[in-house]
Length: 337
Image 1 (tube, helix red, strand yellow):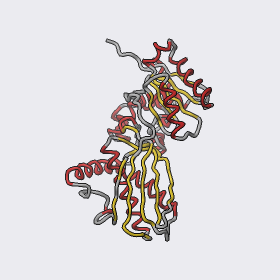
Image 2 (cartoon, one colour):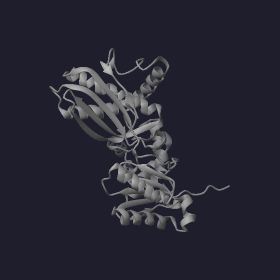
Image 3 (cartoon, rainbow, N blue to C red):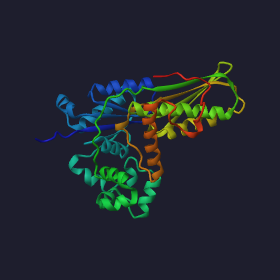
Image 4 (spheres, one colour):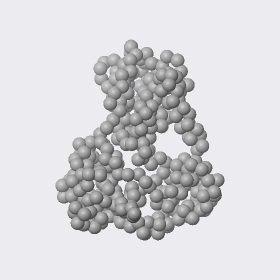
């Protein structure tokens, strides 16, 4: 029995979109195929496999139909990629100029990948690329040809296995329809006005820990963090920041939230409450994680998973950052979706 070849399209939209505009584009693309996944903040992926017979078009012509609809109805140019899986389709879109599409057929995927730089692979950051370059590994083809044991010595077993899969063009993730506007919120109201910067820091850190734990518990990652600070005079300030990559790792969420707090410069502000909102949620198993050369990150994630297990068994105060030891918050902390 043969497996039907998949045809996945990735459309990068050259526009800044509001949530309402993004939702309308998802709805528009759903008129081509029901298998549409949001890739915030300005991309979508479509599984065209089941739509080809209905439209009686080639995969390439159907991608161009999607691009044409975007241009005619919303005046949005897009760069498109078409391939047999989500990773290759996204890479092909990155290689396309606005208004154009790049098709990477399954039988040509290896040849197309071979000469491309290692940085074209998702998850390869500057540190990993520099380490690979140091050993003369500059292209995806060189990674694909490298013996597994050699790559393991350079990166460690887990990262080497993942990089090898990507270098050979493998990506089993399905296109999964998801709501782009989904979010989680953690909120803290203090019993009294607070002028203490250290307490501000601890409050925001505690909320980031809450958000991280809930994301991991629900199997989700977030692509954007919003911090709201409420003052004694009932005014408020809100700041938003996109994360370098979708994550549910509490230290990464805390670093972003604390960066927003620091940028506000609340030296003598009388603060009454904080809220952190996580937007652009995606299923954790559909998001690429950037490869890291730091073994400490893997240890931190393992410790985080152990802490999550302890909290599930013994309660929310069973484990957490040392900075939050003791009575972390004076006040109430409702949290909801």
